[in-house]
Image (tube, rainbow, N blue to C red; front, side):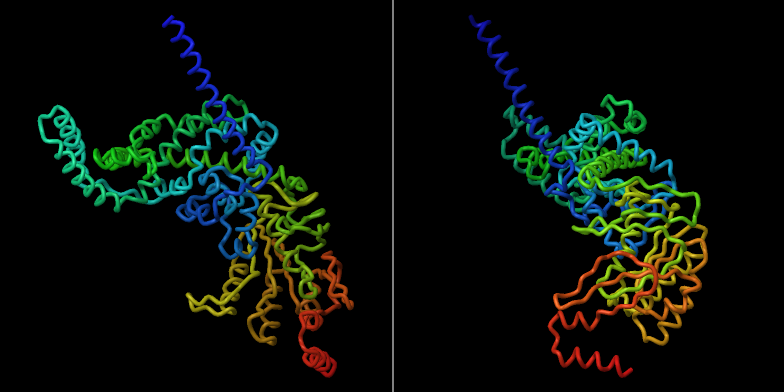
Length: 541
């Protein structure tokens, strides 16, 4: 009878364990599936995502260039990043940001990424297996991982050599008090001593403690991904297996760090036995020895999460194409290209007869958005092999812009000086061997009209008729007239009636013939005396 009860109890326990495992798996899959084809609610912010890039600016992706801060900000790339980011882990978000900051020149690199995009889009089982292994890295504090891998690790201080003695003393006091050889109160004395030792040391290495908490998790995640059976993932897995060979043992050494500060009993054990501090210094030398391997593991895990994120983005935004990179460095063809941040974008189809174009048009007609559309899509083409268009054909380009300038009070720079420096970067870049896409909005608008016009003409003549594409948006119709030999003219237009201003956001040949600055004053509610007076002045001039 007892045997039967034992068997039934065992079966019941097995069923319960399976039930709870199944329910846990279902919850995890629900989290994962909420990330697919939509922006999840709990995405990691841009500040978190920049950490790897900021600590690692000298570590370039092979055959790539680094987008400068000015161009990144001009093109609202933080907002583009937010649109793309459906990563599960801070590591994935950080790698995605790093990848977006470094467009590549290599078609082979983009083709390798595309193969994985394709797999993750079509093979739900593979994608979800990877994401299940990624989930332990989902914790917010995992964002500190780059600190342990790219910031200089602290040297092991002399006093760290006596930590094992205090840990052993704590164990000995606990044992002897349990055997009633010494008074129980000594446990409290040792606890207080070790508490002060821990506080003294921990405040010096706190940021590394945070990051190392998740280094072991990262290693375990990579190990899990390496066990998935998939032919398409073989190259990535073999790379991980090679790097894990010498680093697996690090996860064991920092086991005591892999708990949150509010983990209750574990926290008291860490205080009493100095487990986390001792574990940190024990692992330190091995981490330094295998730092390159650990960095590769971080990159690879982040890379997979980032690529799954892009596959998810494509699932939601299906009006995209794969870029075609032309060997002919004079071709730039687009069909139904649009800006991904616009809720109701108006696509444009165009083939440029010249590499250098001047775009005129009234306020709000779409000139700046047009420049940004081309800049953003060129970057997307060379990072995630995706363009928001029906067709995109262009050479491999390096994008540099001068669009949004402002006074820099901290550096003591005026608006105009910031603009001068920004345009100078384009002038210098034009003398290099790369083919560039230069995007210029309202050149030298920060100074007087006479000097602005003269300087603008000279700079634009200097940039024209070279290997680069130069797209310029301006209100200054004189530039369009003077530079007709060097630049092809295009414009945006609007319609004005009693109901307001209407824009079609389509690009047309030729120079703009419309103006709307005073009409905008009317619609904004300016007094008639001001607007009618302004119109009279124009007639009299």
